[in-house]
Length: 393
Image 1 (tube, rainbow, N blue to C red):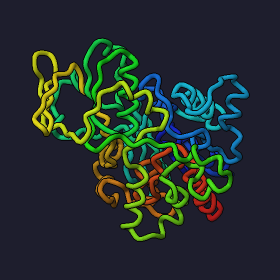
Image 2 (cartoon, rainbow, N blue to C red; image 1 turned 30 degrees about the vertical axis):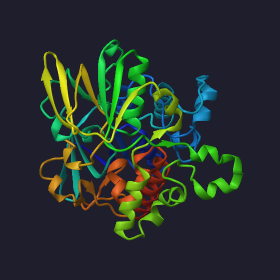
Image 3 (cartoon, helix red, strand yellow; image 1 turned 90 degrees about the vertical axis):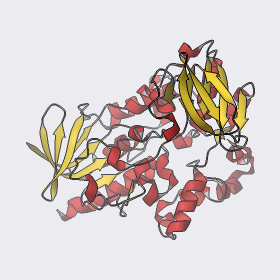
């Protein structure tokens, strides 16, 4: 059994940025495990564009040497905003090779407490004793599937996180449930791949983002309304981009700002692509059942649809107990709020030495943690804490 100061589980944006920062701390032994950019390269639909703008799509190392601009200069891979999925994935893989070259692609099977430390078991049986564990494992286990869609045949229903090839639906009918970015963009991509698509949206007509770009012409004044992170509406954006300040507010205010900043909306560039698509707004699905090889959907107004496939763009519900690598003995020790771990000022949970990054940190650090832009704050904050900790040791 080897012994490490820090073990990082994950190899997406948060894990890579954090590993890059921790790797610069003298005397700190750090191991990183995961398939680099797995969720982005394997679970996102072909043709997807990032909703965040250019500045908010950067990954962060301590000196910001490995920016999107540096990637393009070295590789010649040219693209602009909105950043295409393929470009972002290739950038992330390049960043990993440059900043986290010691990445181990093996899978962690189990994390459990071992006295004041942790016992980390790899899928191949290797054991590691680690003083701290940083979980940056993403959102894949948290895909939200409403109860009315449970137990349906997998060939008739999927979630937007599953990367079902849209080309297979050419000439077929597909209903998409949801009114946020994933639902709207999936509907556009399906239609562009030749499917007959209908959007079923619980709320009203879709809302679109884009005011930040419209007011850029105002120069410095625009920065008073919107942060570079591209998270949250005007006025709120700068506040939620300062997690340390946000954490000082009453809990009710934090909850309001978090939910207000991630309400369902699509990127402005989606609007013209959705014009040909039928939308049924203010409607909810009451039931869905197989019928003659298709799926019969009944809406709350009593109307029915017969479709070849149903795609859920219903988002994610954070619940860290669904991380299957957390041992049954460890999960109950993690104090949580509606599935989110409650974290201290160093992203540390109620289990000393166990840290969570990314979306699970949003209850404690606000909506910035749902987005790539949050990697800058999270990596620097955690690295600062562990650097001080290393000096004390």
